Length: 103
Image (cartoon, rainbow, N blue to C red):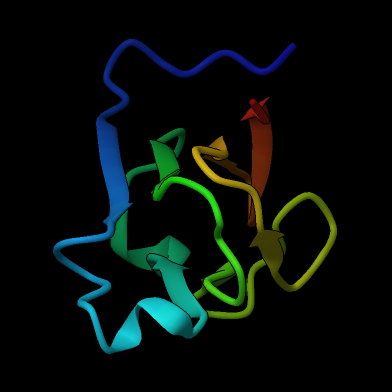
């Protein structure tokens, strides 16, 4: 089990229908980029949440990294369900999904 160090920071990022996705862009996909590993403390935890209700349609959220680090072994992670969320932790040279909520 991966445990964050006591000094790890908790960062929360949301994709809101009224902020990142306005009425015009609410019909398109969006991307959330995790920071480059050399710019953050090791063992940082980050939560990405899709705060859009159904129907989500084409408003998929793709999670990528700024520096090509992997997310659970993949170059990106696609969230495509309303209210879906993932929590990731940076450990070593990659991000690892430690929680996935799919309503």
